[in-house]
Length: 372
Image (cartoon, rainbow, N blue to C red):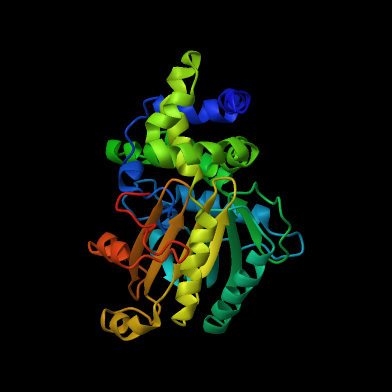
């Protein structure tokens, strides 16, 4: 056990994990609000930057870059987007219109750009979803040019998607950073927001080559033994296993052992199966490099309530993010104009504690307020 434990502590991925735990990190609003992992938050910022007249103060600068970049990513056999006017009065940007994450409309040119935002690597199955949205848009806007964009954490064009433009979040992050570096954001408050956002995107979408899941997989045997120690003797028992020349790693090791107990993929499957039993069809997405599993769904019993609130029948939506570290939940409402706002759910921790879904250990709820 001693050799296996030393091998784990000396693993560069564990040392990186330890540094992230002990090193002071600058204040970031997104970390405090726990918004970094939500797809809808990234789509909101993207839509905000694309609106020429919005409060960012950069006019159409980012919009022009995005349109030009999309044109460069379209397949050679596809007609390029028509030359458009970027005047604020000519541009509308919608959120969740016809279930598309972000839609850009150029009124005079009758041109639509539909952006599907996936905070995960590109996958061939994304194409079917996008083409379904595009068919809906073409049916509603018969005299418009429609171009679809898939935005993922994979590099630009790393997966060939016929008929659509594939754009990587790396390119978006670099474009926003260039505007910031060139002094494009005039307001100090907006500059501070953008710096925090870029820091969060850097950490979220570019996690590096060291994979947390791979660290757990490569040291599965010793972590299993240490979980038994943790269950019996708590953190102190784990600390006692660490040799005197490695004491600075005790807290990080205990935290890693606790997090290795969690199975985010299996927990998501439990929630999904529960939802299907209630005749709800959830949607899945996954970022393997961060071991994050997302689940989204709309409760059909809320259809009447959403219409009374001014939204379409699927306007009230739930979102969950499962990781080894925590489970996060968001409840959002989309109005007719595509505006999204979160709704408070103060009773959620109490409800989840009283109605656990871990069927293998029904007396123990996997839900805890503030994370596992």
